[in-house]
Length: 366
Image (cartoon, rainbow, N blue to C red; front, side, top):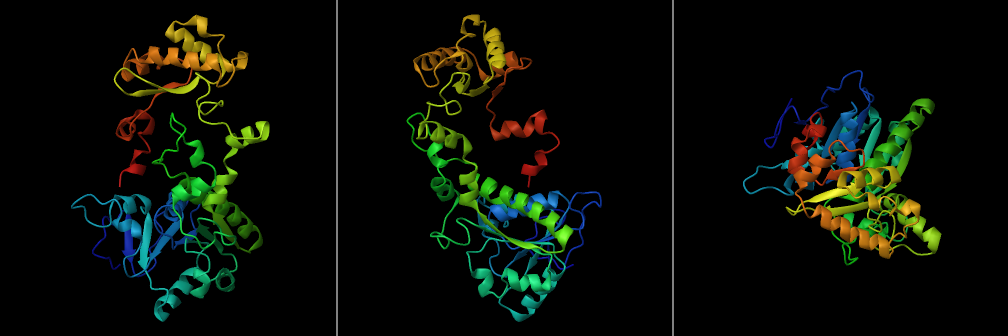
């Protein structure tokens, strides 16, 4: 099997000029399913990775030039290409280089389609059609093919051809507005909500449903995955406030955005943080027992404390003073055996070594 010079580990991903045999266990849920992944960067490749983890034979098809832009993104100084970003997303896939404008490679691609169950693509609307590989054409080759087109704003509509990234998608969907700091100004999250949920997860969900239908009927379908629309549909908790009161609650004024002391993040003596999720009364009262503050037990939203009100804010300040009196490790120990949803806010370096992730930490180790 021919391999390109930028191959990082043959056991993780393989550059090849031919189909690589699937190494998936025959007992894996998607064993026997072949996925062609034409996508780049994060959303589509992450969806492809999830299919590979479920046992599918995933073939990542990149052009013969630079290939997936992720190869060169976030490289450390001196780190060879492809970098960790690309390697994390493309483990367990075979990688094939094809020029979809070259007649020979186009014929190869059509042959791949004739044996495929799923095709993922993330070009702007119309690109696949201009290449001569619109869904109608591909379905004539493989009637059961499920094709997922992942875009920022969908195949149709006023922004269909607009460029965008995660921050733009969640901005349009009313999600970035909800990720506010203490001054109610939007923060820039280092978790790509639009890409990961609106793109990758929504694609996996839709493709799996379409595969069930294709296996039942023999007919595939074309899936229009708009990351912005998917995130918009999932922006449920602020929508509750909108329906309830005609407007979305600002930071610190609702149940899950900082308006109650029992659902908040508190700074510790050593500058770290504890996450308090004692939303239900039983958890809150257990927290009060651990802190030795039984007089706080009745000061809870379920017992009439006004969300975002004066007593809620006052109690938040009192609770903040308590948590500021000891270190994160101290609080973690004190709450370790207490059933009240109080946990440390870990850095990723710490999460990597936590026993909780012992069997899955390789997912973030390229």
